[in-house]
Image 1 (cartoon, helix red, strand yellow):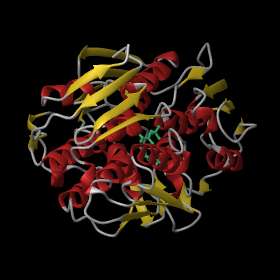
Image 2 (cartoon, rainbow, N blue to C red):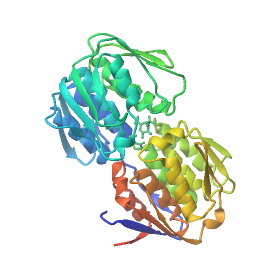
Image 3 (cartoon, rainbow, N blue to C red):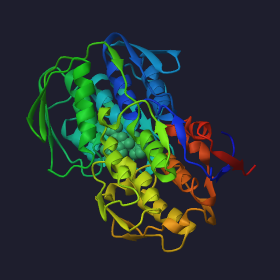
Length: 420
Ligand SMILES: O=C(O)C1=C[C@@H](OP(=O)(O)O)[C@@H](O)[C@H](O)C1
Ligand SMILES: C=C(OP(=O)(O)O)C(=O)O
């Protein structure tokens, strides 16, 4: 996909067929890291190959981990139980999982200076709560802007055995500290500063992956964990398909009245975004209010679907969508209002989508600014299934988590006009 823009041609028929979403980004990047921290060879199957997982794999390679890619969806990872000082700053694009997970593991294992950096979007995504938590553990770490780049002068361990972390902005800070904990020489406790945590399900994904690689975790309370210093054990690990990617296929099915077999029942996913399936199933009678706090990455999908719903939908609990790959609340309201003025409005951090089934079959030329955000591109493509004239700018940004997205829709009969 080298084209600058892509106009979706509404297929005019129900989308039916079989499309298997790629492996989970969240689980692949956890598994790559944990396998890289273990001694010996781990074989990761069902894995995602995309920009985000490439950045994680390249960073681990730069620190001495051997990673082979024998098949399209398999990584063979051989770790030594140690991480070397990389020769260059680690450039991690806009991969939140890599940028947030790596500094804690580096602080725990590396002896030397490491710079963790990302692209211009990542340089606007906050990391200060994690930096402050690591500082409180005696780690020499700085991020002058509160966002990457982050400089860690690592001493290979922490000076305390308990950390309190504020996860209001991102659960990834908690996951980072949890995954570093088994590497320390003594038991370590991770506690949340408040009860409020969006995306709690991602912490459960972290705990499950850690346990699969041999970690011993006691859940002291719903917001506190005690982890024994076991290190990690190399293992074979299968990664389930990506639930956030699945939401586009579920929504395409609901919008067009089709039947798309994604190969995995919604109830079988362990990722938080699978909860969106129930919401999508209510279309075109979606609820008047949807709390997005526990299925954040599915909100762009649900918001574009809501544009075709019979009644308005208010999305709440989505404040931290403003600090994702872009300000998603703004990108959604701009894109929806670009399709039809008044289709969406922001109220504080809530997004209200008015719902206009008459958009189906209309021609509404609109160029959707994706702000290089894969989820904005993938969700607005759904509008293009029903309304003609929807043009997605920078369509290749889907490579962050779903490089095969445009081909997947094409395999269901969707056609495109390119703007080149
Ligand atoms: O831990 C993870 O794998 C993720 C956690 C969520 O981010 P936040 O914790 O920053 O909300 C989610 O949006 C992101 O796509 C993946
Ligand atoms: C927020 C996302 O990604 P990350 O934080 O991992 O960059 C996402 O994939 O929607």
